[in-house]
Image (spheres, rainbow, N blue to C red):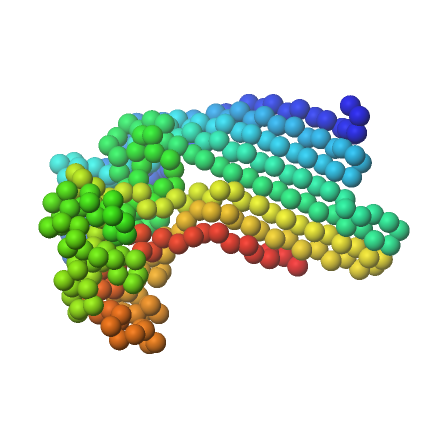
Length: 324
Protein backbone atom coordinates (compact mmCIF):
# COMPACT_ATOMS: atom_id res chain seq x y z
CA UNK A 1 0.00 0.00 0.00
CA UNK A 2 1.68 3.27 -1.04
CA UNK A 3 2.89 5.28 1.94
CA UNK A 4 2.11 2.49 4.43
CA UNK A 5 5.15 0.89 6.05
CA UNK A 6 3.28 -1.65 8.15
CA UNK A 7 -0.39 -2.53 8.72
CA UNK A 8 -1.74 -5.00 11.28
CA UNK A 9 -5.37 -5.93 11.90
CA UNK A 10 -6.27 -7.32 15.34
CA UNK A 11 -9.21 -9.37 16.61
CA UNK A 12 -9.31 -10.99 20.03
CA UNK A 13 -11.82 -12.76 22.23
CA UNK A 14 -11.42 -13.39 25.93
CA UNK A 15 -13.35 -14.67 28.93
CA UNK A 16 -12.68 -14.39 32.64
CA UNK A 17 -14.36 -15.20 35.93
CA UNK A 18 -14.53 -13.26 39.19
CA UNK A 19 -14.99 -15.11 42.45
CA UNK A 20 -17.29 -13.82 45.17
CA UNK A 21 -15.45 -12.40 48.16
CA UNK A 22 -14.94 -15.03 50.87
CA UNK A 23 -17.16 -13.50 53.58
CA UNK A 24 -20.14 -13.03 51.20
CA UNK A 25 -21.37 -16.54 52.10
CA UNK A 26 -21.70 -15.71 55.82
CA UNK A 27 -24.09 -13.69 57.96
CA UNK A 28 -22.50 -10.46 59.22
CA UNK A 29 -23.45 -8.73 62.47
CA UNK A 30 -22.36 -5.58 64.22
CA UNK A 31 -22.60 -4.81 67.93
CA UNK A 32 -24.60 -1.74 68.98
CA UNK A 33 -25.08 -0.94 72.67
CA UNK A 34 -23.91 -4.42 73.60
CA UNK A 35 -26.47 -6.14 71.36
CA UNK A 36 -25.89 -7.87 68.02
CA UNK A 37 -27.41 -6.14 65.00
CA UNK A 38 -28.05 -7.95 61.69
CA UNK A 39 -26.20 -6.39 58.75
CA UNK A 40 -25.59 -8.83 55.86
CA UNK A 41 -27.50 -12.00 55.06
CA UNK A 42 -25.11 -14.71 53.88
CA UNK A 43 -25.44 -16.28 50.44
CA UNK A 44 -23.70 -19.67 50.00
CA UNK A 45 -25.20 -20.05 46.49
CA UNK A 46 -23.19 -17.25 44.85
CA UNK A 47 -21.63 -18.06 41.47
CA UNK A 48 -18.58 -16.41 39.92
CA UNK A 49 -19.31 -13.45 37.67
CA UNK A 50 -18.51 -14.21 34.03
CA UNK A 51 -16.97 -11.65 31.71
CA UNK A 52 -16.72 -11.88 27.91
CA UNK A 53 -14.86 -9.35 25.77
CA UNK A 54 -14.33 -8.94 22.05
CA UNK A 55 -11.74 -6.47 20.81
CA UNK A 56 -11.10 -5.22 17.28
CA UNK A 57 -8.40 -2.87 16.10
CA UNK A 58 -5.54 -2.00 13.81
CA UNK A 59 -1.98 -0.65 13.92
CA UNK A 60 -0.52 1.26 11.01
CA UNK A 61 2.90 2.87 10.47
CA UNK A 62 2.86 5.28 7.55
CA UNK A 63 4.97 7.93 5.81
CA UNK A 64 8.00 6.79 7.83
CA UNK A 65 7.38 9.10 10.80
CA UNK A 66 3.76 8.41 11.79
CA UNK A 67 1.92 5.69 13.70
CA UNK A 68 -1.78 5.16 14.34
CA UNK A 69 -3.46 2.61 16.62
CA UNK A 70 -7.17 2.10 17.23
CA UNK A 71 -9.05 -0.42 19.38
CA UNK A 72 -12.72 -1.03 20.02
CA UNK A 73 -13.80 -3.40 22.78
CA UNK A 74 -17.24 -4.74 23.58
CA UNK A 75 -17.47 -6.30 27.04
CA UNK A 76 -20.30 -7.94 28.96
CA UNK A 77 -20.16 -9.21 32.54
CA UNK A 78 -23.06 -11.42 33.65
CA UNK A 79 -23.91 -12.58 37.18
CA UNK A 80 -22.41 -9.35 38.57
CA UNK A 81 -21.68 -9.79 42.27
CA UNK A 82 -23.28 -6.89 44.12
CA UNK A 83 -24.41 -6.01 47.62
CA UNK A 84 -28.14 -5.34 47.24
CA UNK A 85 -30.48 -3.85 49.87
CA UNK A 86 -33.12 -6.10 51.46
CA UNK A 87 -36.59 -5.30 52.70
CA UNK A 88 -37.13 -4.82 56.43
CA UNK A 89 -38.96 -8.18 56.51
CA UNK A 90 -35.67 -9.98 55.79
CA UNK A 91 -34.24 -8.77 59.09
CA UNK A 92 -30.94 -7.88 57.40
CA UNK A 93 -29.87 -4.72 55.56
CA UNK A 94 -28.25 -6.30 52.50
CA UNK A 95 -27.07 -9.48 50.79
CA UNK A 96 -24.44 -10.30 48.17
CA UNK A 97 -26.13 -11.62 45.03
CA UNK A 98 -25.51 -12.36 41.37
CA UNK A 99 -27.61 -9.32 40.57
CA UNK A 100 -27.40 -8.63 36.85
CA UNK A 101 -25.42 -7.89 33.71
CA UNK A 102 -23.21 -4.90 32.87
CA UNK A 103 -22.24 -4.17 29.25
CA UNK A 104 -19.60 -1.70 28.16
CA UNK A 105 -17.96 -0.32 25.02
CA UNK A 106 -14.56 1.35 24.87
CA UNK A 107 -12.79 3.24 22.07
CA UNK A 108 -9.01 3.78 22.31
CA UNK A 109 -6.85 5.80 19.92
CA UNK A 110 -3.10 6.47 19.85
CA UNK A 111 -1.24 8.70 17.38
CA UNK A 112 2.52 9.12 17.21
CA UNK A 113 4.46 11.55 15.04
CA UNK A 114 8.11 12.47 14.59
CA UNK A 115 7.74 16.17 13.82
CA UNK A 116 11.45 16.91 13.37
CA UNK A 117 14.59 14.81 13.08
CA UNK A 118 18.09 16.04 12.30
CA UNK A 119 21.63 15.58 13.53
CA UNK A 120 21.18 17.90 16.54
CA UNK A 121 17.39 18.13 17.00
CA UNK A 122 14.60 15.58 17.49
CA UNK A 123 10.91 16.15 18.34
CA UNK A 124 8.30 13.45 18.87
CA UNK A 125 4.60 13.95 19.74
CA UNK A 126 2.30 11.21 21.11
CA UNK A 127 -1.45 11.58 21.63
CA UNK A 128 -3.67 8.97 23.28
CA UNK A 129 -7.43 9.15 23.82
CA UNK A 130 -10.17 6.89 25.14
CA UNK A 131 -13.90 6.88 25.85
CA UNK A 132 -15.92 4.28 27.79
CA UNK A 133 -19.67 3.86 28.24
CA UNK A 134 -21.34 1.19 30.39
CA UNK A 135 -24.97 0.18 30.77
CA UNK A 136 -26.87 -2.17 33.06
CA UNK A 137 -28.64 -4.45 30.59
CA UNK A 138 -30.22 -6.80 33.13
CA UNK A 139 -31.05 -6.52 36.84
CA UNK A 140 -32.58 -9.35 38.86
CA UNK A 141 -33.58 -7.16 41.83
CA UNK A 142 -35.51 -3.91 42.28
CA UNK A 143 -33.62 -0.69 41.36
CA UNK A 144 -31.56 0.78 44.19
CA UNK A 145 -29.01 3.49 44.95
CA UNK A 146 -25.31 2.99 45.70
CA UNK A 147 -22.48 5.37 46.53
CA UNK A 148 -18.84 5.72 47.45
CA UNK A 149 -19.52 4.95 51.13
CA UNK A 150 -21.33 1.67 51.83
CA UNK A 151 -21.89 2.66 55.47
CA UNK A 152 -23.41 6.09 54.78
CA UNK A 153 -26.84 6.11 53.13
CA UNK A 154 -26.51 9.86 52.46
CA UNK A 155 -23.77 9.29 49.88
CA UNK A 156 -25.78 6.86 47.75
CA UNK A 157 -26.19 8.94 44.62
CA UNK A 158 -25.80 6.41 41.77
CA UNK A 159 -28.88 4.49 40.62
CA UNK A 160 -28.64 0.82 39.71
CA UNK A 161 -31.54 -0.03 37.39
CA UNK A 162 -32.07 -2.06 34.22
CA UNK A 163 -31.42 0.11 31.16
CA UNK A 164 -29.57 2.70 33.28
CA UNK A 165 -26.24 4.10 32.10
CA UNK A 166 -23.54 3.46 34.70
CA UNK A 167 -22.19 6.56 36.45
CA UNK A 168 -25.26 8.83 36.35
CA UNK A 169 -25.70 10.98 39.48
CA UNK A 170 -29.17 11.14 41.01
CA UNK A 171 -30.63 13.74 43.35
CA UNK A 172 -32.99 16.69 43.37
CA UNK A 173 -32.95 19.90 41.35
CA UNK A 174 -33.82 23.49 42.22
CA UNK A 175 -36.34 25.30 40.03
CA UNK A 176 -34.47 27.35 37.43
CA UNK A 177 -36.87 27.52 34.47
CA UNK A 178 -40.56 27.97 33.73
CA UNK A 179 -41.02 24.34 32.73
CA UNK A 180 -39.80 23.08 36.11
CA UNK A 181 -42.04 25.62 37.86
CA UNK A 182 -45.13 24.54 35.90
CA UNK A 183 -44.51 20.84 36.61
CA UNK A 184 -43.99 21.49 40.32
CA UNK A 185 -47.22 23.52 40.59
CA UNK A 186 -49.09 20.79 38.70
CA UNK A 187 -47.76 18.17 41.12
CA UNK A 188 -49.33 20.06 44.03
CA UNK A 189 -45.98 20.66 45.74
CA UNK A 190 -46.40 24.44 45.22
CA UNK A 191 -49.58 26.47 45.47
CA UNK A 192 -50.84 29.29 43.29
CA UNK A 193 -49.86 30.19 39.74
CA UNK A 194 -46.61 31.02 37.95
CA UNK A 195 -47.09 34.75 38.63
CA UNK A 196 -46.69 34.04 42.36
CA UNK A 197 -43.01 33.21 41.79
CA UNK A 198 -40.01 35.03 40.35
CA UNK A 199 -36.35 34.44 39.50
CA UNK A 200 -33.80 35.88 41.94
CA UNK A 201 -30.26 37.15 41.26
CA UNK A 202 -28.82 33.61 41.53
CA UNK A 203 -31.15 32.25 38.84
CA UNK A 204 -33.46 30.34 41.20
CA UNK A 205 -37.23 30.67 41.43
CA UNK A 206 -38.46 31.94 44.82
CA UNK A 207 -41.85 33.03 46.10
CA UNK A 208 -42.46 36.57 44.90
CA UNK A 209 -43.82 37.60 48.31
CA UNK A 210 -40.56 36.43 49.98
CA UNK A 211 -38.14 37.92 47.43
CA UNK A 212 -35.53 40.09 49.21
CA UNK A 213 -36.87 39.15 52.66
CA UNK A 214 -35.45 36.96 55.42
CA UNK A 215 -37.81 34.18 54.28
CA UNK A 216 -36.40 33.91 50.75
CA UNK A 217 -35.40 30.33 49.86
CA UNK A 218 -34.85 28.39 46.62
CA UNK A 219 -37.60 25.95 45.67
CA UNK A 220 -37.15 22.26 44.94
CA UNK A 221 -38.30 20.97 41.53
CA UNK A 222 -40.72 18.05 41.16
CA UNK A 223 -42.12 16.32 38.12
CA UNK A 224 -45.87 16.20 37.53
CA UNK A 225 -46.19 12.99 39.59
CA UNK A 226 -44.55 14.64 42.63
CA UNK A 227 -41.19 12.85 42.27
CA UNK A 228 -38.07 14.89 43.07
CA UNK A 229 -35.38 12.23 42.47
CA UNK A 230 -33.94 12.68 38.99
CA UNK A 231 -30.68 12.72 37.01
CA UNK A 232 -28.53 15.67 38.06
CA UNK A 233 -25.17 14.75 36.55
CA UNK A 234 -23.00 12.18 34.78
CA UNK A 235 -19.46 11.30 35.86
CA UNK A 236 -18.55 9.91 32.41
CA UNK A 237 -16.30 12.33 30.51
CA UNK A 238 -16.73 12.94 26.79
CA UNK A 239 -13.16 11.63 26.46
CA UNK A 240 -9.81 11.32 28.22
CA UNK A 241 -6.67 12.41 26.41
CA UNK A 242 -2.94 12.25 27.05
CA UNK A 243 -0.48 14.45 25.15
CA UNK A 244 3.28 13.94 25.43
CA UNK A 245 6.11 15.83 23.77
CA UNK A 246 9.78 14.85 23.70
CA UNK A 247 12.34 17.34 22.39
CA UNK A 248 16.06 16.65 22.19
CA UNK A 249 18.73 19.17 21.25
CA UNK A 250 22.25 17.76 21.23
CA UNK A 251 22.70 16.38 24.78
CA UNK A 252 19.66 18.02 26.33
CA UNK A 253 16.21 16.34 26.44
CA UNK A 254 12.94 17.96 27.50
CA UNK A 255 9.74 15.97 27.89
CA UNK A 256 6.26 16.98 29.06
CA UNK A 257 3.08 14.96 29.66
CA UNK A 258 -0.37 16.58 29.72
CA UNK A 259 -3.62 14.94 30.80
CA UNK A 260 -6.92 16.33 29.52
CA UNK A 261 -10.32 15.18 30.74
CA UNK A 262 -13.16 16.74 28.74
CA UNK A 263 -16.65 16.72 30.22
CA UNK A 264 -18.05 14.60 32.99
CA UNK A 265 -19.34 15.95 36.28
CA UNK A 266 -18.33 15.70 39.92
CA UNK A 267 -20.54 15.79 42.98
CA UNK A 268 -18.79 18.02 45.54
CA UNK A 269 -19.80 16.59 48.92
CA UNK A 270 -16.67 18.22 50.35
CA UNK A 271 -18.27 21.60 49.64
CA UNK A 272 -21.77 20.63 50.76
CA UNK A 273 -20.70 19.62 54.28
CA UNK A 274 -19.48 23.11 55.40
CA UNK A 275 -22.84 24.62 54.39
CA UNK A 276 -24.18 23.17 57.64
CA UNK A 277 -21.83 25.45 59.61
CA UNK A 278 -22.13 28.41 57.17
CA UNK A 279 -18.45 28.07 56.26
CA UNK A 280 -18.60 28.11 52.46
CA UNK A 281 -17.18 31.26 50.80
CA UNK A 282 -20.50 31.99 49.06
CA UNK A 283 -22.05 32.73 52.47
CA UNK A 284 -19.66 35.68 52.92
CA UNK A 285 -21.64 38.29 51.00
CA UNK A 286 -19.28 41.21 51.43
CA UNK A 287 -19.64 43.56 48.49
CA UNK A 288 -23.18 42.54 47.59
CA UNK A 289 -25.82 45.28 47.47
CA UNK A 290 -27.73 45.23 50.74
CA UNK A 291 -31.01 44.25 49.08
CA UNK A 292 -29.42 41.21 47.40
CA UNK A 293 -27.86 39.69 50.52
CA UNK A 294 -29.42 36.36 51.45
CA UNK A 295 -30.29 35.03 54.92
CA UNK A 296 -28.37 32.00 56.20
CA UNK A 297 -31.56 29.94 55.88
CA UNK A 298 -31.34 30.48 52.11
CA UNK A 299 -28.04 28.55 52.00
CA UNK A 300 -29.23 25.96 54.52
CA UNK A 301 -31.76 24.88 51.89
CA UNK A 302 -28.89 23.80 49.60
CA UNK A 303 -27.31 21.80 52.44
CA UNK A 304 -30.67 20.01 52.58
CA UNK A 305 -29.64 17.53 55.29
CA UNK A 306 -26.89 16.22 53.00
CA UNK A 307 -29.33 15.04 50.33
CA UNK A 308 -27.74 15.24 46.89
CA UNK A 309 -28.90 18.18 44.77
CA UNK A 310 -27.73 19.94 41.64
CA UNK A 311 -26.26 22.95 43.48
CA UNK A 312 -23.13 20.88 44.19
CA UNK A 313 -22.72 19.28 40.75
CA UNK A 314 -19.57 20.70 39.13
CA UNK A 315 -17.89 20.45 35.74
CA UNK A 316 -15.18 17.77 35.81
CA UNK A 317 -13.16 19.11 32.85
CA UNK A 318 -9.48 19.76 33.54
CA UNK A 319 -6.09 20.01 31.83
CA UNK A 320 -3.10 19.04 33.96
CA UNK A 321 0.63 19.12 33.37
CA UNK A 322 1.34 15.69 34.84
CA UNK A 323 5.05 15.31 34.20
CA UNK A 324 7.88 17.59 33.21
